[in-house]
Length: 195
Image (tube, rainbow, N blue to C red; front, side):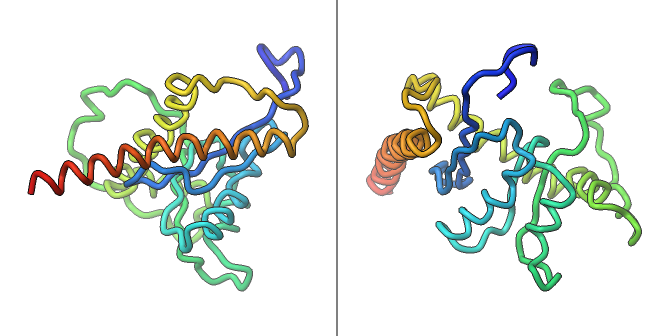
């Protein structure tokens, strides 16, 4: 993969994790040697469906967006809606909010029938429902990677070769899930004891 300023290459892997919103458990994971995520949306949703069943919404960052991938996820092979809606950033946004961002505005008008996938996605993320759903992404998957890197100390693979790295990533995500499941069970026991 290109590394640093893009002037050199390093042996590296792109580790993926799909996280369930409520429990923050990893419900799908994979490793690829592809440098960007553009080709990872379809396989990630497939892994989720295989592991957890129907997927109502896929909340992904802009790196996963491509017209073709979104259409493939949202439509079945027969062209009918699949029941999965993708929410992916397609516009650059500021990280800091302005007064204008806080002002109440009417929802934007829906794009016309001739609108492309990107225009539909941009509209979807400007609706109140789309904003609320997409905001869950940063509260869900980003902390998981932070915990894996900072709290668990996993910053690089120890093994070489895609199959071995995939096994190592499976162990890392399993370890994360065991830690998280312990926390979830403790929270449930505390809540049951309080009622």
